[in-house]
Image 1: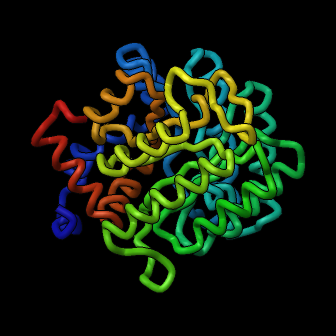
Image 2: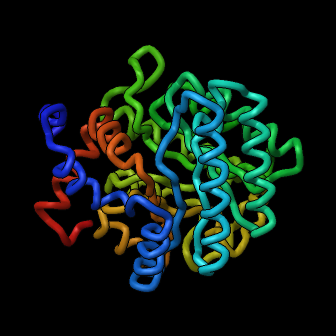
Length: 316
């Protein structure tokens, strides 16, 4: 599937993409969330498609669009928050402008008691993305958390540093990492990445961080459940960790699971049935084609999940 991408007609990519992209506009994303929320009882994080930009005018578009998302979530009473990519706000063009844009968005989100997640991109911006989160907390905006990629060698050090700085306000989404980084800075083998994920989650749990466990991998989910059980954490239990943050109405008891729209739906529904809080990543926007091509090119595992969803549609 990945090999054939360069010659694949756009309408076919769109046919594939509709499984895991809510649509081209905000209304489509709202409709998808309302439908899934009513049917499954899951919660959501919304992403406006697009990332690294070439002008600050584009950054202004993303700021305005995300403000519309916040208003829509509030107006519809949705159990949702937002995920943003710092490069879409100008991080690689003008860091001060990017910080100002992110601060403005966080302030608006705080008015709605809404959480904002800073997505993690490739290794060029790992430290600068972490720095943005820390600077926002310094400015009193604590409704923001980070994403860390388990495959990177530096991740456990980053978890410890963030936890030491933010204390019980540390809120981390742990994922394997969509960006296929080089062997000099990251694990590249399946088993090594899974082990790194497990080790990173163990540190997060021990540090009292709020743990957003983002994976579709059944062995990783199984290991995560074992770790939660060992910590006496679960869907019907209060977070027992003395150094854990106080959770709000939009949080689970110290943890939640997160999955992409349209991927491993059967696993998502199984976790929901067990009572776990499960958040679905809802991407939308006019840049669905670029998003789809990048995800399929950079991580063939995604192509496998999507292909499987066509062969076994009940799994989406």
